[in-house]
Amino acid sequence: MATGATTTISYENCDANALPAESTSVATLDNGQFYKMCPGSHSNNGTSAAFGQPRCGDGSNFAFYLTRPEQPQNEEKILIELSGGGACWDKNTCKSQSSVLKMPPFDFALGLSCSVLGMIAQASGGWDILCARTVGQTDFTEYNSVVIPYCTQDVHLGDAEAKYDGANVQHVGAHNTYRTLQWVFDNFEDPSHIVLTGCSAGATPLPVVYHMINEYYKARDRNVTISVISDSPVFLTPSKFLKNNLQNWNHETVMKLIGFDYDTYKNDVQYPNAVLDYVLDSSDDTDSIGFLSHKVDPISMMYYVSMGGEGGTSEWWNQMNNSWSQAMNEHDNFDVFVMDETGHCSSGLYFANQKPDFEEWVSKIIDNDLTSSSTLTPVQQDTATNPTVTTTTYATTTAEVYESGPSDGPVLPTNNSSPSTTIETNSLISTATTTTSSGHTLVTSMLCFQLARMLFLG
Image (cartoon, rainbow, N blue to C red; front, side, top):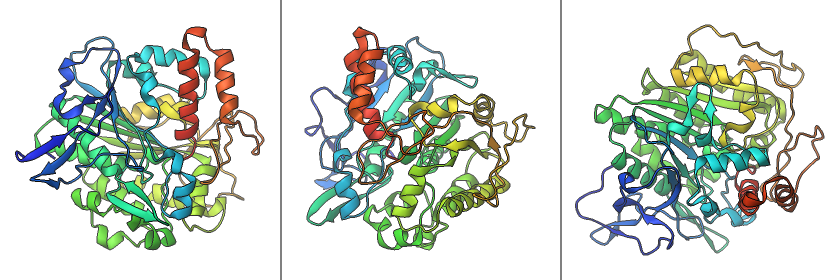
């Protein structure tokens, strides 16, 4: 993934408050504050380089965000989090998702530390900042934290310009992901540990992103442990979507880059299983991949139906369960944590962090200790809804309920048990203003607004 000697890089499309990524070394950045990093446009002798045009779906500028630990560390450890925010693949879905085809307003975090953002998250509720907290036995305050925003509606892996009813959409998530990873590779030559995580559309590509990172460091004889925690991935791909819509994103480029046999599986409903199996087959023994899911996930089910899937909760669960059970049976370094409730993900593993058994499970993922005996207590699934369950689910007590669709506005989690209960964005901002200290009111409002738009729409 190295840049060739003949490559020309232009930063003319970067925002004024962003640092040019390729010419900015991590060593020049202060500890304990977020920076905005803009990868430039790459060309080779006037021709666009592979994955060389990072940008958002509406053609506007893309950037990623980075903070170094507040206290200097002896080891290089990295946390990489991919943002979620839905997906679109045709005229109707992209029209309804048009507001998220541009950079999310993450600039409020510039200059702030993880600890400050963590206090805001704690005061607001409903989300977490991982770089401000310990999860399991891992202290993420010791990690360099990289956030890859999402604005291309292609689960971070696209390489195409699509035209829907005259409107152009840049499905170039692979460009944004690739150039962010290239900066990580250039600036962290020998990290000891990398944790990959993401919510929904940010969780779905993590096996592919893992493979890219692992192959890069493996080729250089680096002894880095990589842990993957994929929160609420939209995992299933119905046949109708594969045949009619997947090509609009052009995942073929990045899938062939990692050596996956894309042509064989591109029209096969087993496509996500094949990708996961391919990645796990080539994974290192010291690495583990863990998926988080709810017993019923209305967001995942909604996208499954929108993509052409048929049936209700039973079919959705059976297909998810069969896929993950197969992966667990065939690979010792893969496991699933299922929360026995209805819900979807938030940022920073928020909902899982509320569960008493999650700390033990996530520690096993990070320590690659999945073969040891577990003390977790399985919960009996409702066989009327989910007839053939073999994955282990874990007891929970709180129901976070969601209700949304590609054409809906932002919908937020609630502790109310009624499935029809929603909280509109304006209500959230009002709540944040009244419950947060005055010094952080504006920041909290902006952050909550962003979370509403980008993290709770799948």
